[in-house]
Length: 95
Image (cartoon, rainbow, N blue to C red; front, side):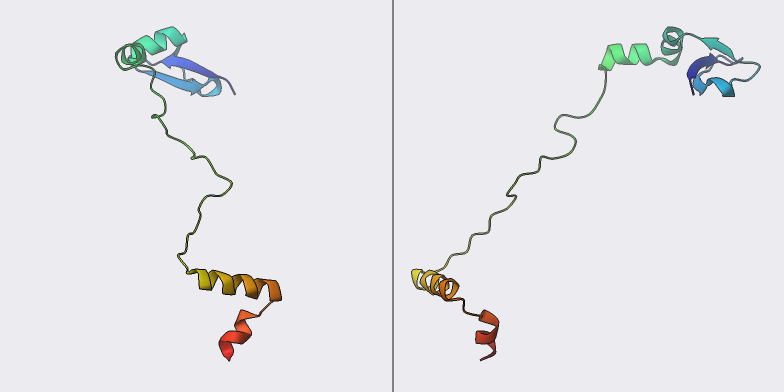
């Protein structure tokens, strides 16, 4: 599937598949297509275009979010004791 640039009988230019070219259309070069379509003048005026700055996928971090909880030293000690001795919090909450 190769594309070609064509100019129809009214002077309009298109980019088409080679198999879709009709009788009244004339195959032209890419340079002639860019000049007739105004792409050359546009690029000269505004630059090459492209993506905005910082657009696209954001980087993924290994640790995206840290949760901080403010607890007292007594609560920290209790949690450390519970982890060491394997306390089941679900059974404690039922009691």
